[in-house]
Length: 450
Image: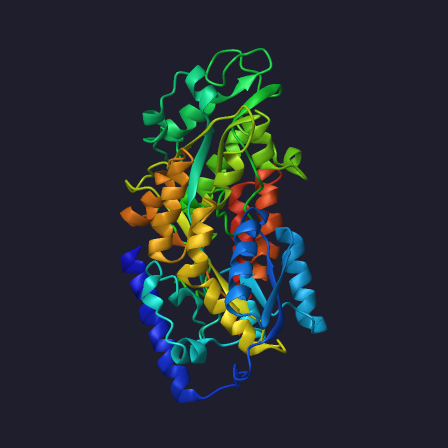
């Protein structure tokens, strides 16, 4: 990760130098008196208590500024936010995502924070390496300040693995390949149980009458596959794009990608994973909590939810080692951004700077919900998880071992997902084979031809 994110930093530096020479659009000023009420939006309900506490502390230190917090679910969040940009009533400050901000930046909907960072002496080296640079656009503008980061792991039902004779050590040392699935598939098969109590790797297993699936299924992952398949494709040498960030050529026509998806889709055909059509409207995490799946692949932001199900003790294992001899996990870093149309830029920027400070991120860390962006706060979060009896090394190992792959940062991300969503659904539902993803890839790459 250090080598890769170092390249990101270099690219960002080049972008800044070019923008300094080339001029460009005007940047909304952050001058003025910091006072009044500002609206702040986020999507994760698990983090809401922490940010309410941050807001209370912020207002105590800045009595002239009030923060109104609104939390919406992921889908509703982005739809409402987009509509707010168009209608001119978007929130002053909002939690932002790497896959979303390029489109907002292209439409000049985000306030450039470079001036504030320099003027207020914000130290960017306090964050985990590379996180601050991810939010520098192609024009050199800074579109957000780091909030938190996440990686992917395997949540598993310890009672089920114990009953199957699978140890924690075995779960932590799984391997995978797209030919036979390695010990990862063997484990998934053994944990699959039909309604007569026959396991997936035993004679007589009825794949059409499954009581417990070895692996849960959220959805097809569209073109990103963050928690669904990217941790597998990332071990084959495959990359989403020709370069990251700001790639202009996608690689869904690569045989390494298609072989991985073919293997993954095959788990449903074998009865080891639910069929895609059965997952519509369902929560993969709640199905795990109901004892319907033994393993779920999900992100570190879900630790709290997987640890909260009554009667279920969730273990966490790292993602399996792949063909290249290493694990992989998508590495995503969130940030808080300021809407360019805010009527209160000074107060909004002050709030974003507070959100990006140790004062707030230590509060977030203390809740043991996510890993904050600041290095020292991340360590405190790990300690908070440990105090709850939760071993989070399955997530942190990717950062310490350098086995992360960056979330694809490109233009046209919504359009890419609009094309890849149906294409991936068709493969996962068995209506088309993985080779048809080459056709979708042509359409995706056509988006970048001028």
